[in-house]
Image (cartoon, rainbow, N blue to C red; front, side, top):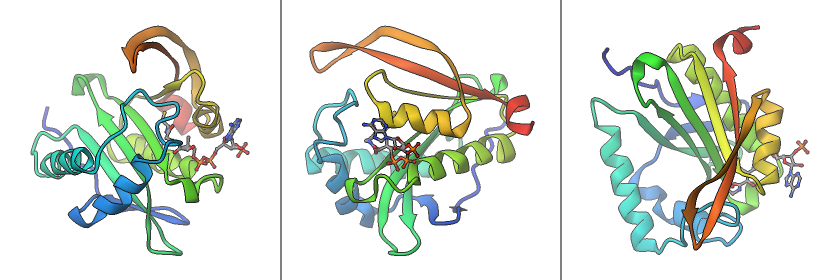
Length: 186
Ligand SMILES: CC(C)(COP(=O)(O)OP(=O)(O)OC[C@H]1O[C@@H](n2cnc3c(N)ncnc32)[C@H](O)[C@@H]1OP(=O)(O)O)[C@@H](O)C(=O)NCCC(=O)NCCS
């Protein structure tokens, strides 16, 4: 099956979700280095050079004709600033029509409903553009805000993955939430 492509940008009431560009490095690094960003995330603190290397990999993804990973920038229309990231990962096998979605917003942009707006746009893209069958999201069991976003999006809780990976010298457990295409369409 040929890999479909996500049509970008995706526009919501207050946000534009678009491809990241080289010029986003400072903004991306600014929220990635903030302690609140990784409080409930397993990744280690990234240096500017590491964020730059990741951005280079993201730019390479953009021209991959078998692209399955969309790590995107989120621009606040009102300010024109990049204030967050959105992720949509297709797979593992396209014939199963599954994807994982995720979100992060800069500290200054939290609490405005932006993550929920990003999530809604990703669900619309996944079920609308890609005609997927199931879309899931995960968050650390102590990430109350992200869990709340999943609930607000109407994803259904499927369970808890208990201590399913190890990072930063501890075990991590995650909530698993998902939506099926029938639930999206009803
Ligand atoms: C998780 C995150 C994306 C939420 O972004 P946001 O734009 O503030 O989210 P929203 O405003 O759409 O919704 C957040 C909800 O969680 C609630 N919330 C926030 N912090 C909370 C807390 N500590 N305890 C309980 N609820 C909390 C908010 O009140 C809101 O719910 P409400 O609308 O019912 O009041 C943001 O905190 C973030 O970027 N965190 C760092 C990266 C991250 O953890 N990403 C998720 C990876 S799984």
